Length: 480
Image (cartoon, rainbow, N blue to C red; front, side):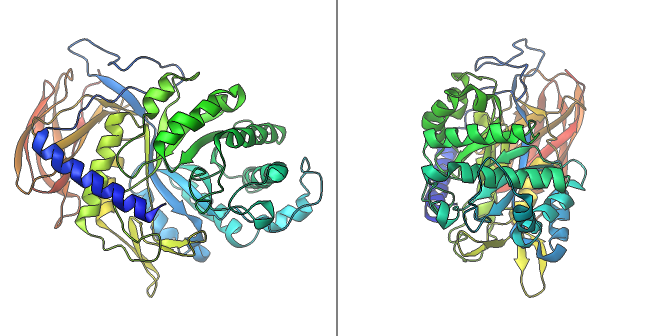
């Protein structure tokens, strides 16, 4: 979470949007990166015949980041309700900082003295972690991944992990997972144990690729020994997407055990670029491994350091453009940073990136524009939907489309970058049959308002999209 870098990246995205408006639509040729182990293939449609849609990646992780420090004895429940109402949400639940074991345990790191560790996990922020996960899991269709953010205890290294304390770090993380799973009986099997290890030691400890993989190997072995062999990893969650693909993936690929336990390759992106993740994964030992962008967002200058989010439309609209671009590039998951405003230990300030703004006087949450933008995407793209080929025929209108194999539902998510209403012809090549598509639109004045829909026939729909708006077309179509 790097405010200055994010701001600069957002400016780049804005410039790219202007360039797009002048030169043509964004390319819709992202490589297929299926999430299922039974799928593989090069960067071409899986179904080349003219009467079947072009199929790309399976989308498995649309959702949000969620900071548990806002639990506040359960006053967070209404915010969780609103986020769960987005649809089938994947939650990157954040515990911050990674310093809950405050002093060195002199016992053998291969053991866990539960008389020592149980009190740690029953109070304070660790109790907030379990209570937040428990309430999220009570909502249908939600999936939780635990992420550990911020530096480690000073005795362990603070902004890095001492080589001599690696086994202490493994015990700390493994004991957390074991308590949550075995004692609290919580439903989570995804773990991202570090955050932005390539950055400044504040977002997470500075851990190079080789040490990162060595730590993960030890952690996997330890989790197996605790009877938690079904835990799967997401990472490296680097600040630099290119560095994840060029450096961390190479180290991961050299360790078959760790690579086999990766559920998703995790990266961060605030500029709409996946850093060549799809291409790098295609050349790895697990070419079917997909990637999640576990942090992304439109611009929010100063929001890491206590400057309230102006909740302007520009940020929400650019969030939509970034989502479209990352999905076109092949991302199987996108997690908005952040679900709600809240205090972060590692910044020692309140973060204001939230889809939900927090009023500290009333202790209430209210949606920002970005909430409705993400709702239009997540609600109509259920987990395991497949991205299909799509184009708008107009250089100012960006689109990305999906089909749900279970229901046949087709959804198009798009943004009109121009200040005028635009008549467009949305084409979904190879999609047969006819279906009425309902339309929803968010713009500076409206929040996910119903608009005139369109008839999709033979993969073609003609419609008018409002000026400076984010829109969704959706309807059930025959399965291909």
